[in-house]
Length: 207
Length: 207
Picture (spheres, rainbow over the protein chains, first blue to last red):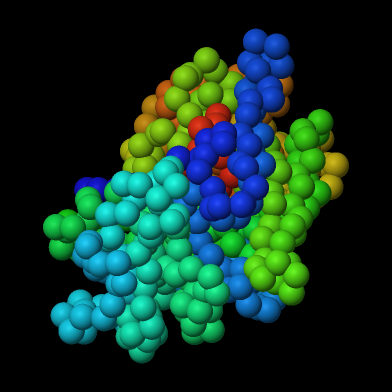
């Protein structure tokens, strides 16, 4: 039996969002006793909570995230333990650990601050050297327990997008993958005509 | 290499919704040239397009769909070809075809009418006998290329929910699974505090 690890944050009313992003609204509009069924309405941008940044977010790419090929959103996972690094950089040991087509997850531990102001103001960032290395390795996607791999003007973001590497932001529970031999990542975006998408991100731990 | 079949309908502005449901709004609110990034806003109920009905939709269940165990949303897929049946009923040949823990998909062909009024007014429905059979078989989920397995007062819905079987509605492309030996279904809802959830539904065809 496979074991599933949920790497996604909850979607709820007034959940944490990136500074200056629109608030998320989630509310019940139909009620079983009155309307004979329950329903909820969600009003959200595409960058709230756990989500995938598509290339359209920061480039003039014309493809919506829902149009990208499904095999880009699943593959062998590779967790890099980068706790304690304010500038997350290349290490030689990653040469063997990261393989072509991997989905690389950076475990910083910063998700402990999710929901606080410091989550955004004190976040670690990826440097150019690590980004170049991951591009050379032809990884499929990169994910992290951070609001973003970098900050304005988002050069690292753009570097990844230019190479077709998508970015998963606001992950959690990455500690559960620390001592796991092998896992598969499943992170399909909604089939949506949007730049990016909310996403349920799941690691399947293989026996 | 696995092959992925997308069983999901597009999410777009003013997409088809169940009669009398609120309209879906999807629009771009941030623009690269002006705002330095693109973003889209989605305003939607949880029953638009391809989605999973959770038990809270029609029962007094208190668990949000985002709280249910991940292993309920993936498993061995089993496609039943029920084209031509207005009342979809039990057949003896399903005894061998459907196994415990399967996610059963009903291929009616009715998704050809998706977007038209007839999609809702002329839909086939599942009868009690087939529902009872699938419950006895302890399937995980049932999915279909229909707006619903039944119509008001939704007794079949409630029968499935009482047994913990979730319902995937508005599937498409099921014809692509007709001659497939074996496939796995991946249909994780958003991690959302709602009765039900929009969902990207994917079949992974195994070699």
